[in-house]
Image (cartoon, rainbow, N blue to C red; front, side, top):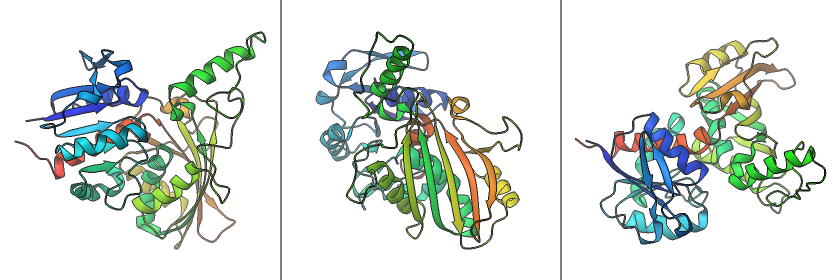
Length: 340
């Protein structure tokens, strides 16, 4: 027996990816509703070999549905997620709205799957930020072995992390570079993104960090361990899909790079590709469409007593968003909403 599932925001990048992954992983769906705003009403989306028409989110009744995967912004989530939750439909939310609510579990299934049971307080589960999700998958098995004291991370985040507008802007500006008569001024981003990098994601905060950087700090503490110190610099790069991260870790105990490599190879959700030769690592282009988080360039940091460096890449539309949400749905089904 399967589940009655709703995908909210089914016409967006993440919503469409959710549908793809539900089909790919053969999630037990008995009935599926795809919802969108009125301006996208009737748009067709694919689910496996089926073609579905979107229904009106504003008029939809969530009563009798088991779970709803939300892939809309915080404003729409704030309006509709409580309605779904009150109707008995468990919300798995991809926005940032509920991530820091102490009554809402923030879940990366490879890291803290058991925490999903906390959903019953509000009938809502939060999906973490895309840059946090891939990082904590790698941190958790190492933390279990040697206890992490501090993490320094620099991100190289693709434009798909800011939606279709970001992808369109990169595409249009790239074409304009080769045709000087076509000027495409920045709209989605504060500066040109084509052939450039921008050390600014989300809004600036009082201490000089951006909200994206703050998210990585706060979410890592909530998901893995509140005692871990995290400092982040988040950078937007001219890549369509796939986030990269350069991660430096200081441990309480010494962890040899070879043991770290072995630990990561055995960890769920991780693929280690780490050859010390030209091309012996994974780049964002190569991770697109894959479920895994890829780890490369594992090496000792000799500048501190118990330090390690590595490179981490993942498809941000998958592990950073849609895949993680579907994995949460799988855990929810196994641990809480078991049927038949």
